[in-house]
Image (cartoon, rainbow, N blue to C red; front, side, top):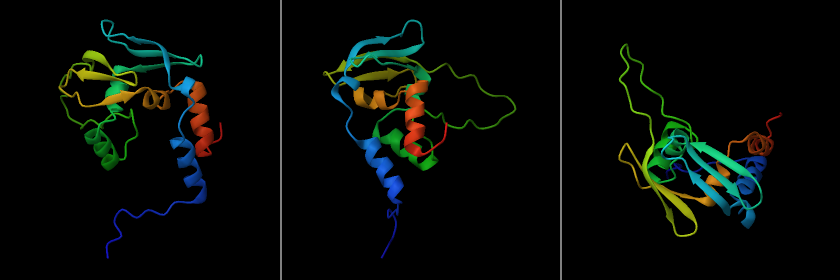
Amino acid sequence: MSHEGIRIVSTDEQARQNQEEKPLDRSASAPAKVRVLLTEGKGVEIDWADGHTSAWSFSFLRDACPCATCLEERGKEGRSAGQPKPRPQSLLPMYAAPIKPNSARGVGRYAIEFEWNDGHRSGIYSWEYLRRQCACPQCRLQKDELKGIPN
């Protein structure tokens, strides 16, 4: 019998996972205003209905793509959402154009989708997913507290 895929977790870790997966309050995951700074090449800013503001660079969002292929790749490499791929060391690094979307469009009333300049376009970023990826100091502190990391 194979034991692949079986993972034993502590009670604390299970409680943390349950808290992380708990649905957000409606006002926390409902955008009041969305700004996609496409021409400036900066990223996305969202003012949430609960008064919070989040901002992400395009490179972070591309590295946090929620599509199945990207999730699987990050899982195999042990990277978290938004963490870039390690670059191979070479004497003469090749120039790579900065990652940015060619276009962005709303998906229903629940998400946004990007067509990236590297050809990728299968990730649908739900408002709840984006709120959970907020990296502002306040949200980082809350995530660290959930993980038991002292501040």
